[in-house]
Figure 1 (cartoon, rainbow, N blue to C red):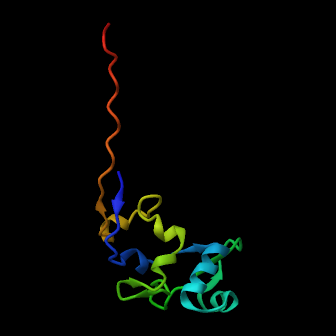
Figure 2 (figure 1 turned 45 degrees about the horizontal axis):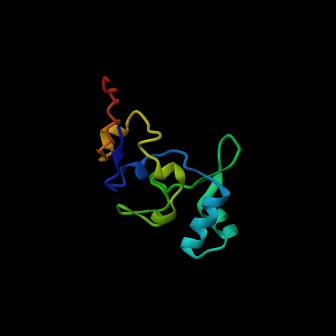
Figure 3 (figure 1 turned 120 degrees about the vertical axis):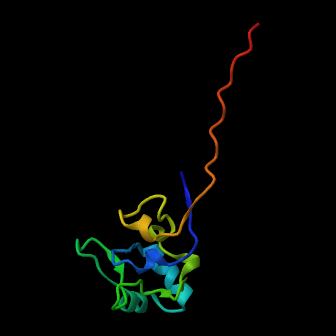
Length: 116
């Protein structure tokens, strides 16, 4: 089963770690018209496991790039954001997320050999 995002922004309001790669940082920096160093300084922090960077949050826990229900980096948002809730989710997501069930492709019907 797959889900189709309705871009309600609910997932962007949860406190949590949005891990970002160097390529994602570069793409978001270009989207925002800033250099990578400035992007890292303004919009990221070291992950608690110290194994990489994550996006910062606003004081209320929202993603730093959430503007009402719009994502300021929608075209180049991190993989973690693009794959929610299909590749990962948290137990509370179903209570707040407005994603709707998508049309999963039906598996091909088995071919029955014809009797000769």
